[in-house]
Image (cartoon, rainbow, N blue to C red):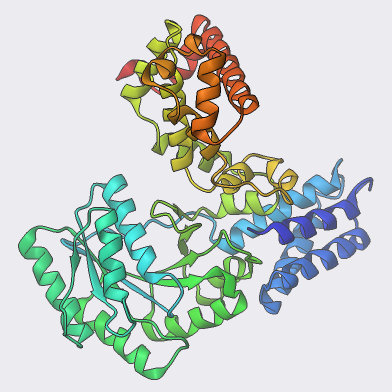
Amino acid sequence: MFENLSERLEHSFKLLKGQGRITEINVAETLKEVRRALLDADVNYKIAKSFTDNVKQKALGENVLNAVQPGQMMTKIVHDELVELMGVQKQDINLNGNPCVILISGLQGSGKTTFSAKLAKLLKTKKGKNPLLVAGDIYRPAAIEQLKILGEQISVPVYTEEGNKNPVHIAKSSIKFAKQKGYDLVIVDTAGRLAVDDEMMKEISSIKKAIQPEETLFVVDAMTGQDAVNTAKEFNDRLNFDGVILTKLDGDTRGGAALSIRTVVNKPIKFVSTGEKLDALDVFHPDRMADRILGMGDIVSLVEKAQDQFDVEEARKLQKKIAKNQFGFNDFLSQIKQIKKMGNMKDLASMIPGVGKALKNVDIDDDAFNGIEAIIYSMTPEERENPVVLNGSRKKRIAMGSGSNIQDVNRLIKQFNDTRKMMKMMSGGKNLSRMMSSMNLNKR
């Protein structure tokens, strides 16, 4: 995401490279390119102009005139202004109320139903909530069935009233049901339309008035760019929602919605969705997004994703195995599974500073681990636990069973052995102990 915007901004900063100091002339040239980059990213013209005017004012301030590296100083000023534009700090979702009621709104096709399930899973696993999903979209074919399938995948019940064509009644009844059954979170999915219309807005307004939700969230497809911002304004004028959800941020989005929407509706972006998997939902951090837009990566989010998949007890067992040189292919397979759970591989790689740019034209297949897994699954239990038994005939059998060749099998075994040696060296020194201590493993 934001690849084109990042590239254009980087190009504009190069205009200051080699300059002795920031001046009104070279600032004007740079900001002309910055404004073009923002407009190409489908940012509202008035917002783009205001943004560059603010940057110019700060860049020409007295403390900046004698900057040793004007390009870096300009990058910092633009970064700070991007953070300001997108909301400064993350905004937490309001979970007060028993049950806490969250109303989901948006156009058809924006990803409301999938987001509802993602939010239920996130709040269940990270906040310890006991959620109930409510199928309030009575118009779209298979909408109720879709929510049921998603609810089953995350082990969250779905409240439905088959045949009832009154969404206000369904929403009110679901809250009564939640109180009776002890659910402390109710997420109401509602119907969308292909375009904003008066009937739709009256219906969603009636639902909100009837259930008085703690949070009303507006879900918008980030790939629709400036249209998303216009739609958000119309919804906000009628609903006065509490926050925005940007979906499909992993697609070919130009970034205009993320950069414009808060200024237009004066409401925070609370979550961003970056894939179809039900754990592909992240809290929106303006500073981290600004880092990514400017090609600085996002190490903090990468570490958080790793910690979400981190199991303290498993790590202790793994540490003991490594120390005894008993790390086998089953352990290797377990580590691969944890990495895959973290999300889209290219998106993860882009969080590492400098890597995103390097991988711009590289296609990283999310199925890249499939070949490795096939080889390991073709091994016997003994071969996985004790790789030293792998001789020529065994390798040939494994290659045939996994649909690969001897070279692939040998390459994997070499990589595995190199990894095991490195981990053994770490376990014998102070590095691993320090790492484990930093994760509080030795304190639990």
